Image 1 (cartoon, rainbow, N blue to C red):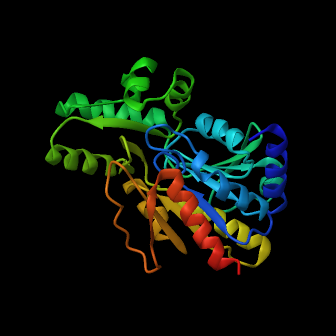
Image 2 (cartoon, rainbow, N blue to C red):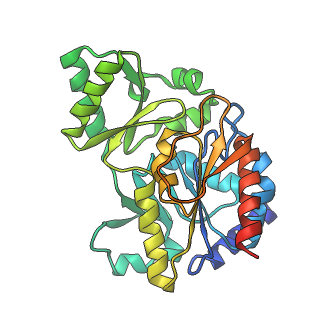
Length: 297
């Protein structure tokens, strides 16, 4: 978008913070962003329509704070976002400043840059120390972002140098590449649970993180909106891989985006599941337009 378009898109989202008619929560890689090129342009018509309707789009991804801040700017978004597979929620301080004086009983809220940070996961330093200990003890064959140079991260992800540097700036998780056996992966997962950590499978990597997922901060945010409006906005959730399942399961409108590299995730939802015919952002555009055509009549 041009800077002028950024302005009107941001304004439309900010006006709707108190009373959105629905919340759109989306995965990024393979969903809103093309799996290979990382382009979102095929979803642009639906993005513009959501902005004109004042419907917030919540980026909900394994990506880092730095990565999502950059994407927010590119997409013309200024609302809340969720990082590192549900590890933390960031809220624009201008719209949610009241939380600083009415601290929720269940979650601590602190100010970071121009955002309020609500943490649901574990600190990365704790994660790296423990999985390093497990690797030394058991000789398990895996490696992750903490082991790789920026050049190696570029090779494994296909990102450019700046984007790879942002991807490496994890705060609450560690992506790993598992090179060992399935039985040892099961043992590794059990060991993680003893430290209140979990393992999520994403589109490219396994993610070691705290006991959270993409649904937990999203439901917290939905409850926050409800507390201000006395109306619960329905959730439209879009994803393409296993680490999206929990988010998709809580959606009022779950959308499975067709992937060029994997099957649709298997859900346990009692709601009708939309499975797109198009891949990635084209499928995103397809699904959002279909939902809007029925929900906003």
